[in-house]
Image (cartoon, rainbow, N blue to C red; front, side):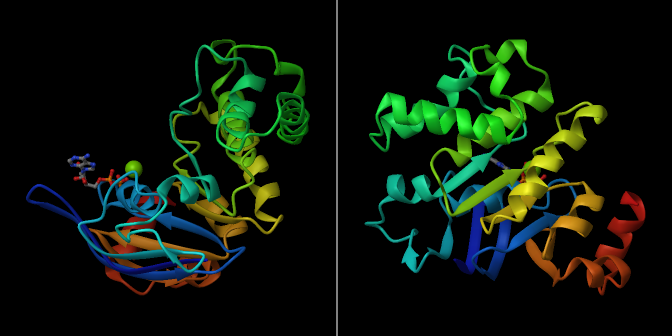
Length: 240
Ligand code: ADP
Ligand code: MG
């Protein structure tokens, strides 16, 4: 599904990603963990070209998205993203947030988009908030809307960048529950998170990033019980 070859990213003289190579199969649920500043967000943002890699290649569904002629718009239809701070459209209702891209980008009729939108809002438990504005929702509700919005494009991959980090503790669970139910649907998910319990239970794989490199790549059972590197051990001791 996703193939990354020798990915480098620098911001000026700051070398952030230092040659990441990895492959993610269709339907995998991969959590990316690592210290703050290790390049986790930059890595995710490179995957959908919100950041342009300095070097290296990225293939999604066997199409090189880093190629000069790549159709970035088309790729983004297939790769959804959920951000820490939701990024909802404040002047649109919950339902309009969800239907906007299917109507504008995919050209789906308003009534079909609304039908789909209501199905997705039901899935994330927010059908009754369809006509509210985001400002009237809790953080957990906003994030569930953001997930429904990403799903509305029917992407094959969703990238989550610390989806629960901006939430009050009592709201983390409702968002993780939605993500767990998604993890069972066969959609490919990459999730940057500090929720070790989620990584342990819901992920098929953990990538541990440190200083711009993938230091470990293992199933969660193995990673959490027997981290190989000193850096991962040290990180886990602080987290758990
Ligand atoms: P993480 O998500 O693991 O905390 P980031 O990918 O956000 O790490 O950041 C990695 C490093 O890259 C940090 O030192 C950060 O300051 C730097 N960085 C990230 N984005 C930019 C940017 N747009 N311009 C300059 N430096 C950046
Ligand atoms: Mg980050």
